[in-house]
Length: 349
Image 1 (cartoon, rainbow, N blue to C red):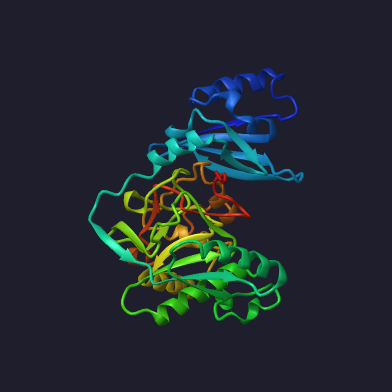
Image 2 (cartoon, rainbow, N blue to C red):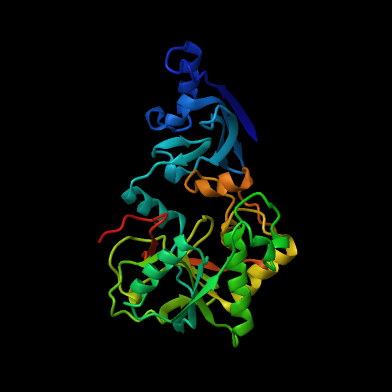
């Protein structure tokens, strides 16, 4: 393993001869200086190589007057894209077209054995019984009722004041983060497992979800050509264009967070509950869920900033005793569910 240290004075980035030589040395790593605005808010950085991969470690201004450490892998797919400092987190700033290209390369299409058709037993929406969310939920239900959906029910979760009442509260390793959504989600999984007959499928919602890119005549009671081993399916990552459910393809998936809708099987729910009880829920909201993917890679690429900021730099932070405890996670080729509070893509209509 080799390490090269490069120090940057952020107050005189383009003036100091020492800085200039450092930049020239850094360019030997195929990085375009014009596309690396993070250098302007960086105290120091170095590049090292391990097992054939190059890694960038930088000490960045987090926007609050503090210097924080961040590390990403210099993935060949991303070397020509703009890399920025987002409050101490190195993250690529891609256009939608660039994002689609990289996603298609990082997450390959599943071409294994498939199940022709699976039935979605029910939708359960997580909400809270307070005025703000009552309004949001009622608007959402009104819109969902325009579609051919599985049976929809609402699970009333927790506030900061009531979170201690959750049966999963003791599983939360960090009591200082937002655990209300995590506990509510786990309670829904537990309820679904107890009501399931064999391995069935649940569509999980938050209360501001919106169907997109599909015709209202589509039958959302079913999914088609699903990977045989699938346990969780993400419907909010792919192309933001019109689609037909029967034509959707699936890709191996991992990492991410703050999601608003997904499909999960009874077996998937069991694995998540087992993880929470056995190892403890370590990070914000649903970060643990996607780090449990059996396809997860040690790839702090800057493409997925949530993982790093939520795990203090330990990207592959979810460790389990057996690979059988991991989830088979896939995402759809198209976005079919978005949300109003934190859209995963622009609303087109």
